[in-house]
Length: 75
Image 1 (cartoon, rainbow, N blue to C red):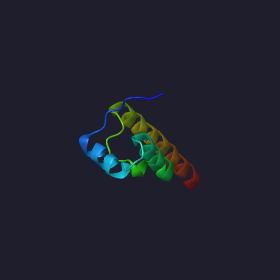
Image 2 (cartoon, one colour; image 1 turned 180 degrees about the horizontal axis):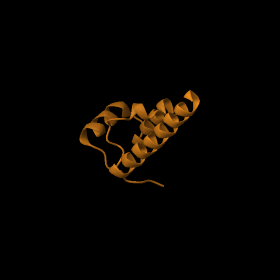
Image 3 (cartoon, rainbow, N blue to C red; image 1 turned 90 degrees about the horizontal axis):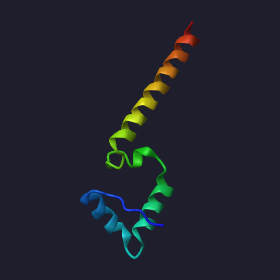
C-alpha cells in the first residue's frame, strides 16, 4: 500500500540527490533505520503543529517530574 505525503521542495531535492536507482521509500526507510533519533530530523519541518505541541507537553511533564524527584531527594 502506498500513501501520499507532502514535503518541501528543499527536502524533495535532498531525497532525489540520495535516491539514485532506489525508490523514495527505500531512501526514507534507510534514513529512519540508520538514525532513529529525533535530532536527525529536527528542523526538517516533518512534524505538524499538533505533534509539536504534544511533544512539548510531554517534555514539560517529564521535566516537572524530574524536578520534583530532585526536590524530594534534596530533603
